[in-house]
Image 1 (cartoon, each protein chain N blue to C red):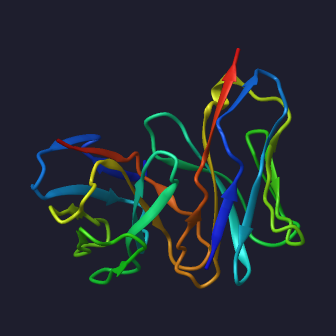
Image 2: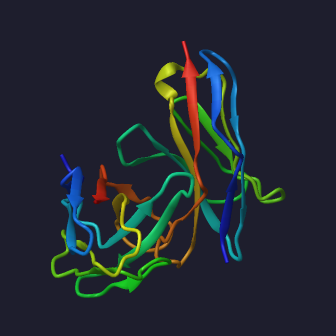
Image 3: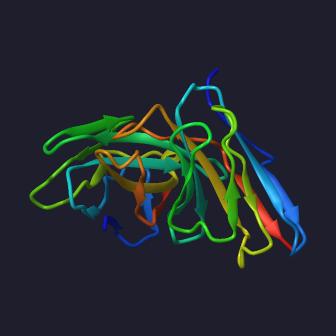
Amino acid sequence: DGGITQSPKYLFRKEGQNVTLSCEQNLNHDAMYWYRQDPGQGLRLIYYSQIVNDFQKGDIAEGYSVSREKKESFPLTVTSAQKNPTAFYLCASTQGYGTDTQYFGPGTRLTVL
Amino acid sequence: GNSVTQMEGPVTLSEEAFLTINCTYTATGYPSLFWYVQYPGEGLQLLLKATKADDKGSNKGFEATYRKETTSFHLEKGSVQVSDSAVYFCALTETGANSKLTFGKGITLSVRP
């Protein structure tokens, strides 16, 4: 079955450590996105990528970094510069541009101790 | 910029009750409108969408009509079930905006047996 996988589902890290969240899709979608979800705040866009080897900052990119070396993969690194990293992180993808429907992965809950 | 406003929650209903969740939006162009649903511990799933004024999206007994004159996209269901308990997000994306979604804050629905 086609879809988006995120791993791991739960992740714990010590303060000051970088951590990388995985996102893989086998939908052959061109565009991929990373969102952060906090209670009562909806979803906020961190980074997005329209094609391989290209990505743009979203609304809250500070303290995060991404890469897009392969079409199916869009890993997110939460760096030690992110002041409040504990959150639920969601990856999504779309076929292309415009008004295409976004398909979401199951999410990774990151807790920084 | 774009914005989506959802009614304050949470909402608690008895099974078979009528559901309305309000959503209004602000956009500079001609957006497509979406309702996403998030079940506990999971990612978001598309519930329904509408791409132009007066379109009605429908799925699983839920409906929403794109009202340009009132800039609204209210979600309705005639008879809710316990299995409808989830968080519901209204969202929009504008044509040519690379499918970037703007989300409302979400509202939690709990349905009692």
